[in-house]
Image (cartoon, rainbow, N blue to C red; front, top):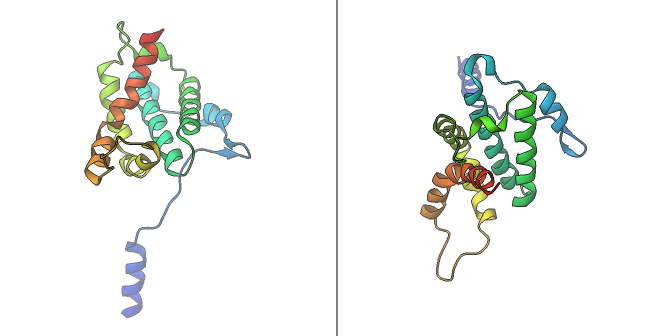
Length: 166
């Protein structure tokens, strides 16, 4: 009976699992991501696929920073992942924008939800992203929570700013 209890306890414990993109000696294998990572765009539509690509890209940035990459390098990797996902799923970046350069509401709403799924990684990355604060300002837990809350919208705003600057 005791052995059965420990066996059940063992199976009820969560096991760590590691998922991610394929890597080569140079880091992420962007070509493999482009050729192999398929989203169900035919089923869910291109807007939802674009939102998912944005979510994966935003989270990739936070995962990379959390794991020690410099923000600029991590953002470059994130951009490469986004481009690979878009190309590999035959998505046109122009589809994600309204005429005024803003991201379509339906895409923005889902992308924010998706980026929010990596909130813990974002919280862990924030201290590396915030290097200097004005004198007397502290990176408190509340401030980190607030920054994690606004990160998804700020990430998407970068795309809008780039689009509007064209």
